[in-house]
Length: 304
Ligand code: ATP
Image (cartoon, rainbow, N blue to C red; front, top):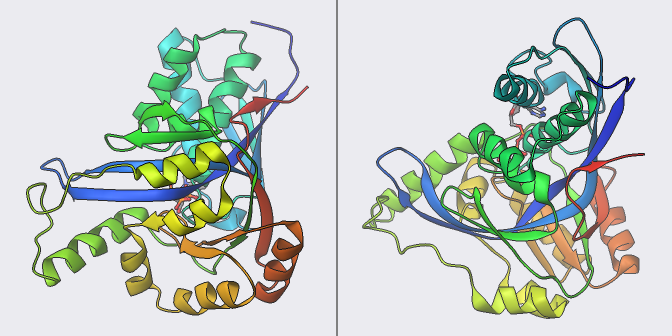
């Protein structure tokens, strides 16, 4: 054990610049080609010594976050302690800025943040590969929250290949009132596929593949190429459950965004813009729930 009083880790949100969803597997999951980009909207997780596991939080959406052992950050602390055969004696405090249930992997971010914070607090020095393995057990998006930058996620999204990004991309994110449940959006995607007569199983849907044009646009830092290639197979399902999002997407595009899409399972809408000035204009048009952010952002980072 170290004598550290408290450690704080900053951890980013993500947007899926491509989310290709395969057919439903027999285990209920879907194979994905998931191109993650970390964006500069951050949660902060502070770990400090405590007699047992305790979790608190602050931030606009904190009322919809369970501050109990079901919290993904608490589960991360328990998993790390179990790996080392110790008790999870820690107070975790989450400062939330990432929209909750917004399709930006806020819970996953907190899990990755808690892992890095507890590892430092308890002086464990867990190898990075072991941290990534714990992340994958906690959830499909958690390894990326630890890694940050940009990556292709395959399998359920947890098998990561880092991607090169040749520039900085400017975004606006419009949070929406109320969240969308990720499993409900996948179920709606399956339902729409059945309704359209194509079937929703592995044999019915083409195997998901990353779009080479999109990967090249990221590598080159080409914002127009990226705008042309943005794609989200869950968008139709998110819009089916939340038809009001179509209006938000249109308003951002009309205000000058190069492209607009639902972020992951939604309901947050993401707008790719050419520069900071347009970002400010789009954010102003969309109202107080809209926030500009840059990408790529670093993964879970221990703050000095
Ligand atoms: P993803 O983009 O990975 O699908 P999301 O951004 O849509 O996820 P989250 O913000 O991760 O969704 O929240 C999903 C649900 O998880 C919430 O409704 C909440 O009840 C639960 N949850 C558990 N722990 C957390 C946490 N630390 N932060 C936010 N939500 C949490």
